[in-house]
Image (tube, rainbow, N blue to C red; front, side):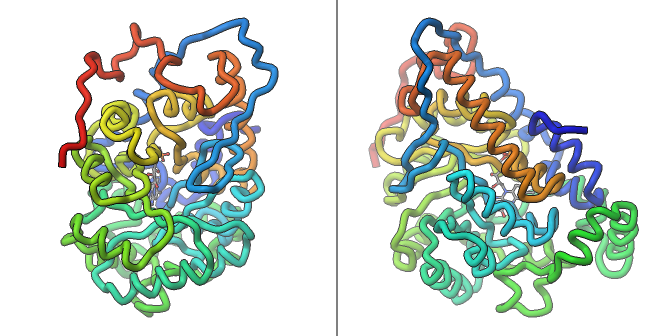
Length: 397
Ligand SMILES: Cc1cc2nc3c(=O)[nH]c(=O)nc-3n(C[C@H](O)[C@H](O)[C@H](O)COP(=O)(O)O)c2cc1C
């Protein structure tokens, strides 16, 4: 099968990966209502076809936090991404760099920060969770500065992890010790392409950023136990000030879904927010990103940079998310499916596809520059996502 779309890469990833890895990528929390809604709401955004506007010269580039991007797309932080292809985060970061796009490394990556920074030339973005051990955080932030990371993404929608049923069924979570290892081993045997590439040649399989400080207990076999024990559920707005004291570059909060929280982010002085529900992996039933975005844009668009993720499966979806109010978007599963199916070449291919699809979407909606994409591009008579009245929530605090 030759992949023509991100959904094709999803199918190729399903065929290549052991089920415990595919279900981890593909799944969401609980009944997966938000996961499905992320995709469905975005897909249903009705753009307006406009004609006769000279669209011969389309420019998808944009500037974000002083960095020039070939299109307004960032590769989202994905925990354990390095289990999907040999040294997967390094391969994906290189593909992003070659496409002129930032790569955001997860705290819970397999490849450590230094390894990924060594594989690429452009500054990385780093995603951080609040870990109880503040010494660990200070050391990681210092490492990020030493390796010239440009941007810090602080994820705020996971003080505790949501329950993901698929991970229990597949053997990734819950089945501890020998029985869990045996289940995963038997699944790996049935996927020889993956086993050769990753299980044999992709070692070490540890959480690269965490392993050096936590030693043995940071292995993948107790990934979830480690998260439960080390994530700091006491994290609060006061910690943003603490972070600011240890990070001088742009600081972005990831996981904002409520306009009041967006306003508080403005008050906290961050540089940007990511409207996100963690790809439908945390609180199931919350608003899709596409539905949350216009309300948040109405509240804070003129005060900080707004990024958004969740459900983006094509270049057309990128244009839809920008029309709803995002300055740029992050893609999560899209790049991981491609990495799992075809390594760095797969990631390069989907980025090319997205760029081409964006250009067509811009041409057919009659815009030639990113900053010309706005709500006027949405057929408001058919959209249920745009706020009906002009009620704007203002910054009052
Ligand atoms: C397998 C997987 C692992 C993820 N790991 C992280 C992570 O370590 N840190 C984080 O902030 N977000 C994480 N996310 C959320 C993504 O960064 C992003 O918000 C989400 O994938 C966007 O939705 P999409 O997959 O529909 O594009 C993860 C998502 C997936 C699918």
